[in-house]
Structure formats: structure tokens, C-alpha cells
Amino acid sequence: MNILSMENVTKSFTEKMLFEQVSLGIKDNDRIGVVGINGTGKSTF
Image 1 (cartoon, rainbow, N blue to C red):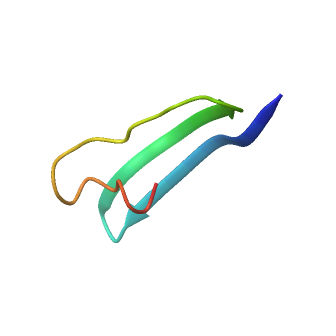
Image 2: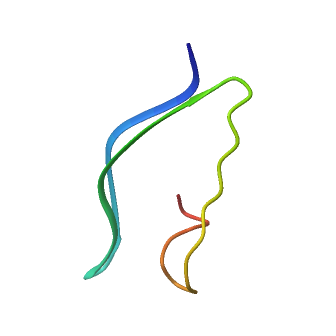
Image 3: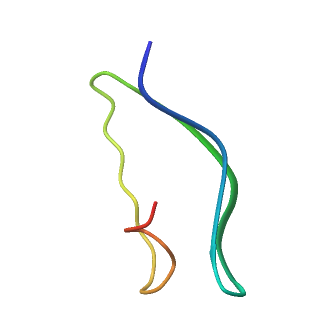
């Protein structure tokens, strides 16, 4: 069972696409990391 799920999420600011059609499921006790260079949408994600 997922404690967090998202499907087909897209986010952009003006003309800058941050991510497109992202799907994710996180289960209890999963560990994840979000890495990337500045301005790639990590905090928004």
C-alpha cells in the first residue's frame, strides 16, 4: 500500500518545463532522494 501516490503530474513555470507526466508511488519504509542541479524543480516536486 502506498503512503504517497501521484500520477501524470506536470509542472512548468512560464515556458520552462520542470517535469512532465511524472508518476510515483512511495510505500511505508521506502527511502527516496531527489537530486539535481539548481532550478530543476526539486523543491516544487
